[in-house]
Image (cartoon, rainbow, N blue to C red; front, top):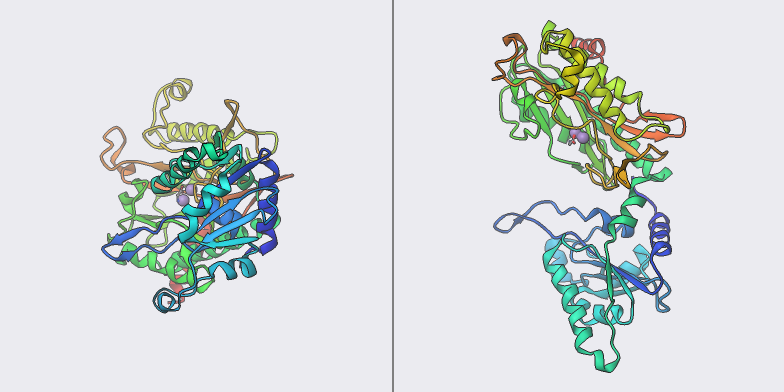
Length: 442
Ligand code: GLY
Ligand code: MN
Ligand code: MN
């Protein structure tokens, strides 16, 4: 499932329409990352770069120059090279860049330093985001120095450097109908993989063996990669927010917290489900689980156009403090508990984040210092959790080591919201009945 070429052309046109007159934008591709010695991590294109180009190759640079007669969209990329392509695979080359990707004017990447300073010459503003790629920052600076050195011949470097992020990330925050379709499919694939994990889970399995079910099911359904490192935390490992070792045994009587989502055409899904390894919640697990679910539903009900970004988070805090108080885990005056952030030892993150090409996606959360309101086309996660550390001596022993998070992906619509990940069961009854059915059929 891929976006069409025209969508990238529309994005470039919209971005260029917002650039100041007589300006140039430069965006480099992501750098490959070495895992060890000469083995690389799987290459993932930079999201801003891909958003404007749909071009997934490394060693490439997008240049946009609104109004340039020879073509507004310029791409530098690797040349075709039959000998190298035998080892590393197909490259579009400058010709393919024009015929397959709608580039107006393409050059090989080895010409970048010679040509880029000429392209910058006489443009008043350079749209370039400093600080992401140091070696590329240096190349831009040396292009500017080259132009300064030629000032007597009439050369003029841009007098202003403007960050691309503001324009581009505001665009990325609002999803088009075709982006929504890709994100819905990524969410669906991921939700069904969570169902499979619930069906396959058995006491005695290793956490990474449940992780394997996600790799298998993501790829089987058409996604090449997870969108982020999968978390499979059994028992007290569920209390470690970024637990990724996934190398413990899943024990009878414990819960397992799984945070896993796939990537589809560079768009992420991000789902967390927590369920009993043996298929049945204990009374304590049930009590905390229901509290997290109540907090999640309360947060969801705050996703409406009249509300602002922080309202779901505020709703979670209120439900969590009230619930922990009712269970006797927190004691004392409720309003004092709220004032003292009494939830913090148990719920230490926020209720969610924007979701898109990056799992923690771009887009401001505040405008002029105020939380921004929800608007149609935004996609976010709602993911409250309660984590009771095993060494928290302030709570009764029976609660210790329980870690629960429930995370869904939400599209803001004009009437409220749509849960994109609804196919992953989340009530206690749904989970227990799904797991019981799966156990019976084995
Ligand atoms: N999977 C990362 C997160 O939930 O924010
Ligand atoms: Mn998340
Ligand atoms: Mn997550």
